[in-house]
Length: 382
Ligand SMILES: Cc1cc2nc3c(=O)[nH]c(=O)nc-3n(C[C@H](O)[C@H](O)[C@H](O)COP(=O)(O)OP(=O)(O)OC[C@H]3O[C@@H](n4cnc5c(N)ncnc54)[C@H](O)[C@@H]3O)c2cc1C
View (cartoon, rainbow, N blue to C red):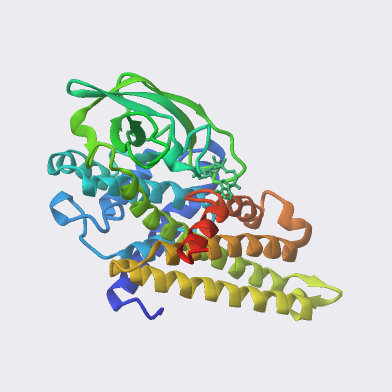
């Protein structure tokens, strides 16, 4: 038991693990092949209460703390297909939390459907011209009486095809070079809104069961009441939710690495070469010892910053350090564990092959490693 968990967290862990073993793992192959997660599993998660962990009870949530989210993300990340926790966390932690800053009326309308898994969410920030420079986005919104008209496009949007509710970032007014953050605003866009076009479902290297799409806004008419917070003041709101997003990616990175390493250890014990199990070769033993140590360090950093986050005390520097370290470690682990499997590791039928592909996106999505280093360096006033 990690130092931050109470007994209730561990009881909750058991129920999530059971769900993953019985209702997720048997279907991941099929979901990966189809490139999507069926609606039925979203509704099932809604029924059990997994999609509203931290939301208030009045909307159907559990009103629990971030440590429950940590447990939930750790457990669903052991399913062997990272696309699943990515898709689910996009819904629960990367997109829908913007509603916390919306009006009560919007929360009442959207949160119960989101928590029940009846409606799926996506967050649309990145654009074809660049994802790292959030303040430099080109999608713009113009006020037209009781509506805003959105024009522009988005790319790499997780749940882009299957979502029902899009949290879209757009600029109101011209780009002000003196203050590039000014004008950034967040809108709730329902799928059926006129002028929203779902583009191609993108063909990816990994995260296959999580659909990723292009979106186009052509005079997309969004009611003013769907503006989140104040017009033009969305940038700090986005940066704040990026902390949650980056911590969740860190949790996924550590937990999926842990599972891949456990599998590799079992393989090393069973596989015989030169009449000895692989685990008896010093080079393999040392490689495993290094990996266990790296994962433990990554996990403790993630736990510590998750705890700070749950207390409202996590700085962007600490979160960036965590995202940087855990996602880079996951990629090192992916390289090393695949090597332990030899030729089998390169075969699609071995889960490590998918882990290797899935790990690659971790240092890119939710802010690249370079951007994490920029944030850390900035906080050091370099
Ligand atoms: C599978 C997947 C799912 C995604 N899901 C979503 C989603 O749901 N919603 C969403 O909005 N976005 C999503 N993204 C987009 C993701 O957030 C961006 O890919 C990421 O922010 C980087 O943006 P970019 O790809 O445009 O690269 P760019 O910003 O063009 O960067 C290219 C390279 O230059 C480096 N670079 C850029 N600026 C700097 C700098 N100042 N200093 C040093 N190096 C720099 C980057 O680190 C990178 O290596 C997803 C991406 C992937 C791959």
